[in-house]
Length: 387
Image (tube, rainbow, N blue to C red; front, side, top):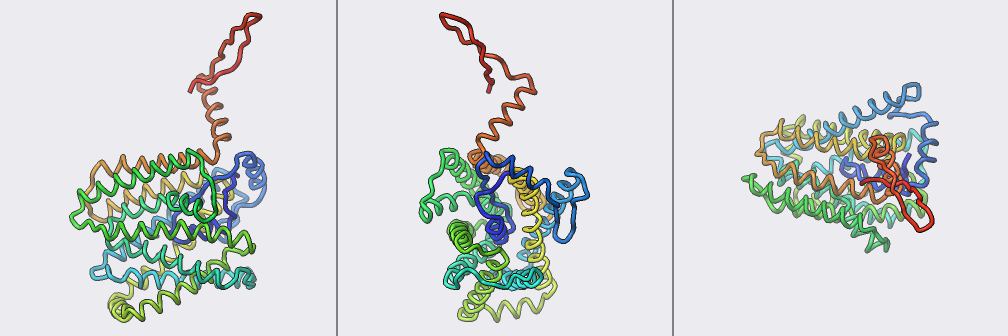
């Protein structure tokens, strides 16, 4: 398996924030060793052991489960905001989501017998605030943005993560990473311009909300990484305390702003369309994270990113099919620019292994020729790849 730059628990918590996969792949020198090591272990999907199945069937089942959980997640999120009058209550939906995630994490901790807190509470105070900002702003933006536009924005976490890595951890990034960031930025701008040209209710406020959510996401990823590496905390602990404290933050904020009573009154009128859908929305997001993490561990980050990128593309297509909205081909090619940025970032993290695979593929396709080097003494033949 090709390893990631983050510990598995950090990766899983990052995924929990919005049901989207954001993976940066690590040094290719150890990837083949890790792949062999993982393939010898059993593959578990939630509570099901898949070790008796072939690798092909394991991949098929994990891929289908990924699509199933996250397509339901995206569908329910957009469906909730399609309810007439729910648009102002995005923060109340986030409150419900935090409550469900806290319950799920608590139950998982009790089941695993892992009850010891390792990260200081003052760190969780910051993490909870950033988590609230990331998820609250992202959920609220759905009420003001075309849903495909929100999905495209969430594909571009590299931009704030790259900036946050430079400012917070002093990291250095390659030219490929910077180029990937520029491609994503260009794709976002073009996609947003397309949205504003065809959407009669386009609202710049929604773009501002999702942009601020991504900025908070760039900070939280780096803070989580440092905290979990330093204290060796498990994911369930981080989820429980981050979302538990975040629930209190949102509850206090809604109470002080007077927003909780109108939201509660509204949701009482439509309990199935609000509380019921929110429960499904939260459950599928939480379970989807576990499936994707299993996919990463068993088949590598490249395969996982490919599956989740295809899933996001299908989510956008289904959004246009199930929920009537204008369409322009500028959506298509601007989205492809974003995808190019995603894979350019993956290539930068795995340049050596990818170059070897490309060279092997070119050999099989008959595109590998021998270059002749002439000298005064002799003629030496050396292999050359036509690229």
